[in-house]
Image 1: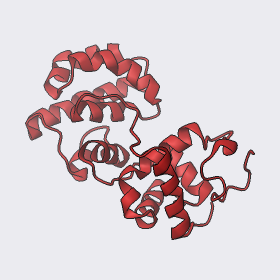
Image 2: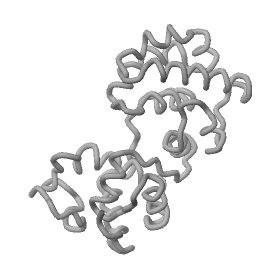
Image 3: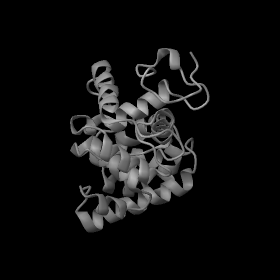
Length: 214
């Protein structure tokens, strides 16, 4: 695990990320906040590309909790069976849709605690929804961010909670809103797990990773 980088270095890292991509976007397709919740819940241990392929047709017919309940669990499975763990995910989507109808009038709540009370919605999913839909500087730490945080020294930590806290504590406030998207995209396309593309990296001169592939 790398040592925590100092403030000036982190600020320069995010200045470069911002200059290269001022408005980074999540890659999960959705049409409203409900479909965003569903898409993020389906994305656990699956790729965004795979989820998007499965949900394009689904969200055309089931873009509200009630429409999802009308479709039913088997109808939902027919759409998402190409996604890993699809049976368990289908059960959770139907359960969370029922809760949204029964307890929230069909609306998606905007507090982390309320979101995390929904089946299949953990802290990471809640943070994605809070960030992408409501513009809250919530940090959704996935495998990419955990790897980069520890590899580079931007936000090291022994578990995802520690990495999330390191982002909140060390990344300048003006970069907090988009921080997790910059890090996820950097991890997905540049700072990859097996063979990082260090030669194409914007921050290679600031990164603590010792085994650079230049």
